[in-house]
Length: 278
Ligand code: 13P
Image (cartoon, rainbow, N blue to C red; front, side):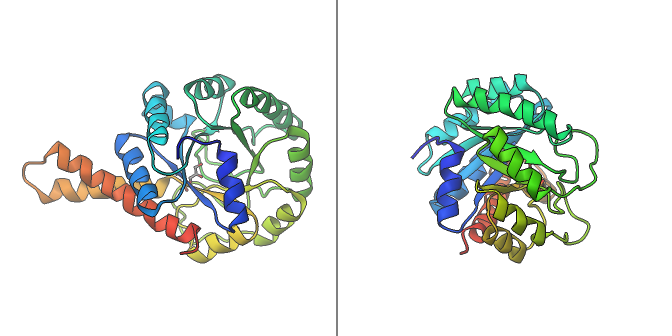
């Protein structure tokens, strides 16, 4: 068990009608919490970090920790760059040993998204790494500081995009958004079904925080093999930290760290149970 290409996890999940959980991390407690959950359940996971988060969690510190965590795990782990914004960051992540990268060029015109994604596919091939790309616009603001209006993926364009670029996984926009939803989102499963019919590679669902178990399961039945969870883990960590700090008069760093790990662990376990249909 070790660091593996993300593609392997996605294809295994597809065969088993499951999805692999991709959990965003921003510090050591998040890495430890996610890893503890994966090992407790003996299930593979993806550890990921978005380029936008590197201002708080520098890649030169996070990358060696994420890769080392994967290499020492008792289950298979992929390490993924989520929402890469620059080719420079893609190069750095591959250099640190990430087993998967995503360049989010979804806001570029279709032809430009294809062209830059092809470059990423060539770069990743030299490392045996997986490539995820996004077509359509997922709402919220994970990729940069602007809020985006949701624009569903066009199923015909999705097929052309996948065939022309040679990517391994495609993130779809079906009414999903990053961050906490004000109410349960209305996901366009009709659009997902059409994409699933025209595209043969594993599909990825971003914006997993706040979706219902039923929505996750339906998405998995329609080709979703990777589900991204970020906000729920950050919130779980912050909530446990707050609870601990307000419950004691003399806070202890080591206990605080343990509470943060536990918050993330519980959130990851909860999602893994749903993603593996258990
Ligand atoms: P959430 O923050 O909504 O869970 O989205 C995570 C995500 O899609 C990261 O790319």
